[in-house]
Structures are given as structure tokens and as C-alpha cells.
Length: 219
Image 1: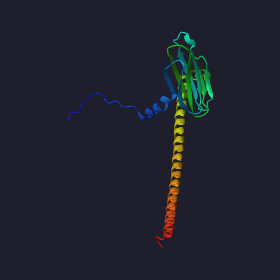
Image 2 (image 1 turned 30 degrees about the vertical axis):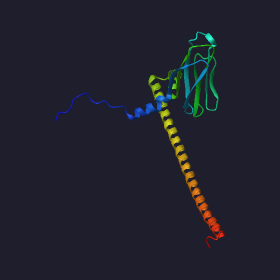
Image 3 (image 1 turned 90 degrees about the vertical axis):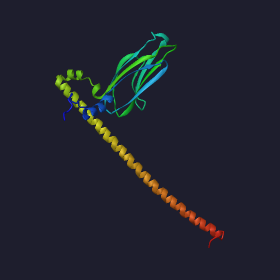
Image 4 (image 1 turned 45 degrees about the vertical axis):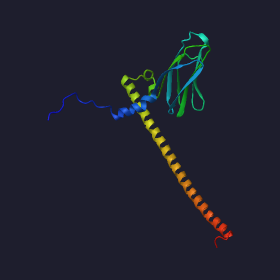
């Protein structure tokens, strides 16, 4: 029996590569654009790990030609309401900060003006972790060769992956402890409920016995 001839089958992406893309791809870079209507506010939220450098660049296009006194404001806060970056009359710029703890961060754009003005186009590009570091500047300061810069980047990337796995392990342990604590509480509540039902049934038996004796229905 003759076999079918044809081009060799292409192998799919390796699981390790998919894992790296899953862990680092969506979490390191956030590039988004949206329209901001007049007198409105739009916010973006993202969870970021502890001790990470966060950098970003934004650009707000003004199509009103200066009409209506249109003004745009940018504010970045954490879950406690601490202001990490704020810019009045924001049009174009960059920002950077380092996270002190694992938290939910909020980036808010607000537009204020009067009259009928076209929506503003907001472009936001955020990076954190390895992607936020400027390795070209690091190479200049530390006088590193291209190969050494790439090794430094791979080292930081490996450290980021290890930290992600450590965080996931910690979260898994916390969830397991929570489940065990919940199961224990449910068990104790079930035992308590059972004793309550037994006590109630015993009390009903004695009460009915006294009642029937008082009515001389039983001896």
C-alpha cells in the first residue's frame, strides 16, 4: 500500500512557549485606544504585582480646535485612593511609578467643556515589569555589551516568571486554607444543627407526654 506524499506536518507551538505568552504577553503591555465624549469620565483598571516599575505614554487628540474650552485630565490612583500621577490639561506625555504592593490600579481620563464638540481620541500605552525597563539606558550606564544586555533581559524575564509562579502558589495556598476553613465551619454548624434538632425533638416528646397526661389521655 502506497502512502500519501505531501509537505511535512508543522508542529504546533510548544507548551512552554504558550505558557510564557500566557503569563507575560497580556500582563506586561497594555495598549488601548478609545473615544472620550465631552463631560465624561472613563477609567481602566489593572492588577499589578508588588515592586514593579510601571511606565506609560498617553496622547489625547483634540478635534475641537480649541472651541468650548475643552480640557482633559488624567489621574492614576490605587485602591486606597492614593494619587500616583495626576495631570491637568493633559494632551500628551509619559508617566512612571513603582508599585509598593500588589494592588488594583485605576487610570482615569476626564473631559470637561461646553457645546457640541467631537469626541476625543485617547491612546494609552502602559508597560510594567520587564517591558517597562529601558535596557538601552541600562547598557549605557553600566557599559554593557549587546550580549550582556540580552542576558540581563533574560535574567529579568526569568525572575518575573519565578515571581509569577510564586504568587500563584501563594494564592493557591490561601484558597486551600479558605476552603478548609469553610469546610470546618460547615461541619461544626451541621453538628450544632443536629444537636439542636435532637434537643427540640426530645423537648417535644416530653411536652406532649405531659400534655396528654394532663388531659388524662394517657397514664
